[in-house]
Image (cartoon, rainbow, N blue to C red; front, top):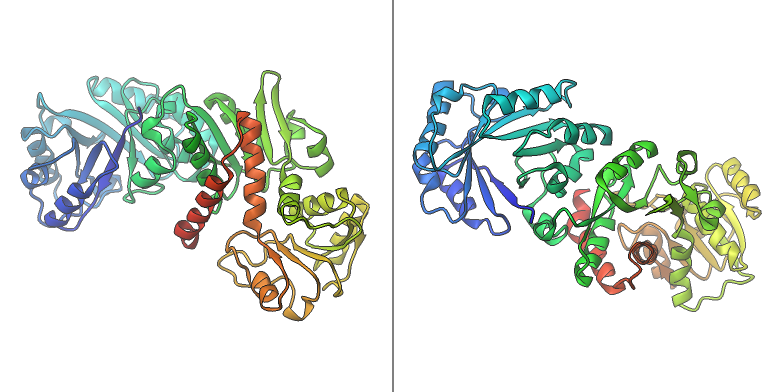
Length: 478
């Protein structure tokens, strides 16, 4: 079972104790005494419900204590004297000044906010030799998945805590067992920390172990993605021992190297990596080759395979509404990957497709490539289906790709899923035009990914609810 240590910061002792006692989703509590104006170590430890890590981080190591070093070390020595379960001391600090205690275990820590140092392995080894009985804590800023792998390799020094600060390092926080870490830290006290509630309820890490199967989403950026919420909710609902994590990168080969090392079994792919896999030796199926892109990777005995569920996901909401588009006049707005998928899907069911883009030459190029027609911008009225395959309208920009006066047709389909009702869809609804939002496509393609990976029917309603909840609770902070 992976453990969670909730970091608690405060300006006063009363606030620190209140926050300490409010912790519910963690196994340990880190009490950050730096920043507390009226520090009382005995008060911080008294009546605690959970084991604690006492930390008083010096300003020279990214903390908020900027007083005399003797005073700071005296606070940590007092915590040891009073039997705190763990005390965190910086590797560069004077260990002799804090003494030792039979009830307290030392965490010897090193933080590097500037990057992942080239000599990380020698630093970790030096820390282990400096205090053989201590837990070695290494927290460095990672800028790539390559750094994440180096962090994993270079900190294999026994009992340890391993943290990759920065977006590519999220996997170190969600899957501490993959890095040999004693626990992970939760909260909002350090860059990239994830709340204990999310670690518990979305990622279910306290139920995880070395046998837990790993899935991922890759591309960049990923903070806006509802996919981790959907897939983890589905795993949880069906009792599948698996976790789905973000692994941000713009380098397909880097992702594959990290996925091999960590044991990723399958992945969702988002921009800008959907067209990158053939060059990396991934075997694309007929659908991916037709689409010119893969949004799903599957790890098999023969290697990595790629497919594309964007086309099927796009068609699903139309099929559910029994919308007949054979011979229908359909206009796709945009000339990127989403537009390609929408146009191909519509062509496959016999629709007459026109592509319209603000850059007419791009629309014309894509139309020729796909064997469909291009259209002037904005498209002429009278269409049976208008599809927005551009990002215009994505939160926080309340915009529409075309003017209200252009909405003269039978149905509008917006692939943007955040917000659920874009300005384009709002205008269409006000004009009495039936609409389809992008979340329906997102869930439809995610359901197919899940079933391909697991061989189990996906809990569609669970995934839909998880995506909606994610957008409601997290969307405005993206």
